[in-house]
Image (tube, rainbow, N blue to C red; front, side, top):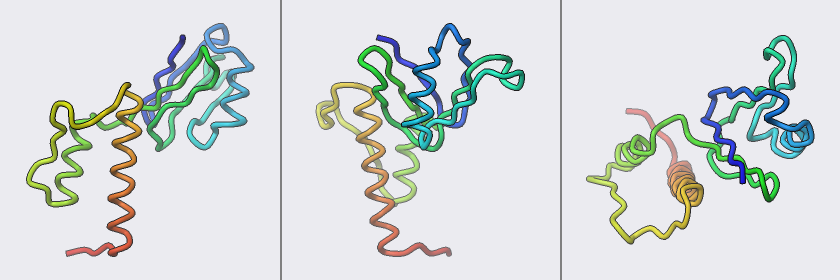
Length: 129
């Protein structure tokens, strides 16, 4: 199994022999919301250029090829952001308290928590002091 790791907003280049055109077309057709793709040209040094947009998660392209979209911010910083945003004394995941089988599942869970908290705050309203 091949896993393509992309970090948010950081372009990654692939030679045509590293990324099949059919896979590039699949990304372009079905996942252009999440990944910006540029086809080989002189501008991209005759390589495919993939750039993750502002999404984090896991995309199973085919049974053999998967894409992992990672945040540009280290995971520890995400926890610090949660602590700051919600005035938490501490935000820690203790051993055994989170049930995730894989790293992509962990990222998806964390993204879900962050999304729910943002929606909750947006319902209450945003303010500036």
